[in-house]
Image (cartoon, rainbow, N blue to C red; front, side, top):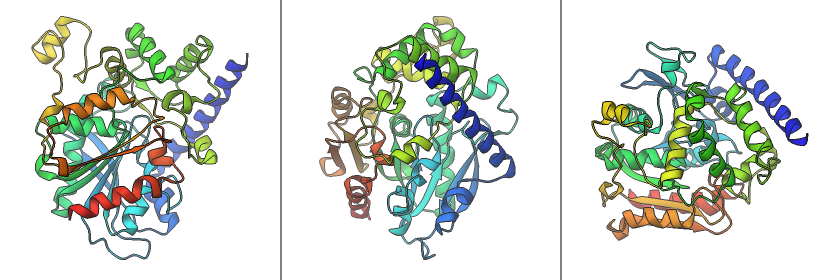
Length: 392
């Protein structure tokens, strides 16, 4: 009974959030007005159109809190799944990476993945159309990142520094492995880097992978996995009611691990963003199969149509250029980035130039501490700033 009450409460909060953010989107509000300008920062709203027609919103902080224009290279911040660019602005200015970078002289750009609140535009499709949601992280790596990189590069005439969290690390690594973005990238920081996921200790992720794969036809029929919808209600029911081993009183911990340093007030106010159900299934395929491969359509005919081979092609992460400065930050308490999976990734990078690879391991950190942690400014962002400053 308690599980049903929890589900009802979660859905009510999510529905309230969804109606509020939808109203804000229709008014044309963005993160600049709601999160940056209110803190005294100059903030610009930008739009980027991908090759496959998705219209993405971006925010730019071109100056510090005193209005002094940036004098360092552009830094692109890319959020993870079920989030948007607000993640980088969520805490106070002295604790949020976007503000910290701006105050340290960097030209800050914040991206928002297709399908999130302020990136729901398309040149020919509307979000209510099933085809709008026919994508996974393959398309984020193939279309979104190149469009964003090109836009920022054209605006600034400089190479970009990149900071990605979670899914934002996977999309960059797979893009680089295919030879994309290299000429426009100056350095990359990968926080909670996900690539190989077969050893995840997250009970929520493990059960989710079984749930999505077992009922793939059902889930694909819903197209959009969004807060307040049928998919979310079923998701909570199937997991919280049918799997008593998962502590649904703290969904964040069940998914990401015991984050040590979150603002509990902020954590309670954070509500996930929409994504494509196909994207969720693709991640579950990675958990089940232990590889980094393109989306598997589930039968040889569909795979042949899309890939001209029986199984999806794999991404060869050894093809990431060895001379790109990389900063990898991981936490020992992170359920999603298990040490064994991280080691597989590091083995793929074993030929990377030693002086171009920085690894930061934080014993007390879990998945979300890297962006929401109250002490991340000291534990993560100070070393990150040293890394970026050393490249110039």
